[in-house]
Image 1: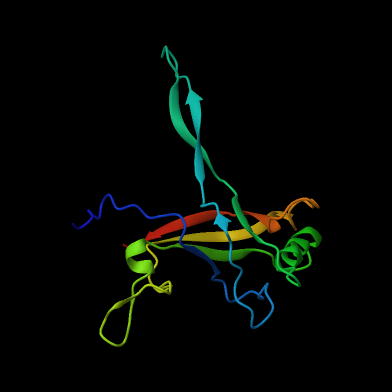
Image 2: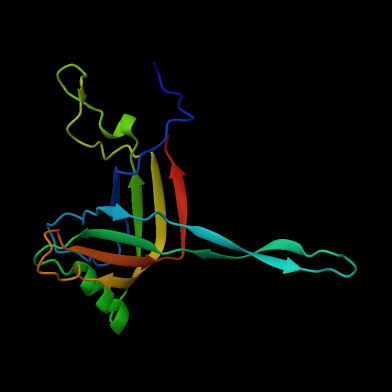
Amino acid sequence: MARPVATDFIHSMRFQVVTIDGSRPSLRPEGRPEAGFTTVSTPEATVEAVEYREGTFLYTRKYPGVATMGDITCNRGVARRDTTFWNWLRIVIEGSGEYRQDFDIRHFHRDTALSRADSDGGNPNLTQINIDDPARVYHVKEGFPIRHKVAGDLDATASEVSIMEIDFSFEHFEIEDRS
């Protein structure tokens, strides 16, 4: 039985973060892929409600006020010889260069994410993500790092992978629904 398209939800485990501004210097070493993240919070917008009482009205009226954008948090495992995000944050702290970056968060749907056709007869290939066809793209504009935890807390009794965190602040975002 076919699933109804309107109620078929996009799962949160298939995503990709990609820098899109090619005019600024790359923040990663040449020849290395973009960073992979285990978790990424999606952009959030909040509008403040402003109360106003007019003349003889008994109750206040509410109007939309200032819109603010929430920060984006990304987590991933710590890798040896990778200080890309720390170097970026140092540029912000020291003011030693252009630090703002535009990037996309691509969100994939299960119907299109794992369905690249094989060349031998059109059978679905369930081993690769089709990165050419995201279901939704969040275009984040003018982002820069505001907090970076370079590694997880050090604990001699722990056996987990060390996780680094980075928080980005940004000016605004757009949503492109590609379904």
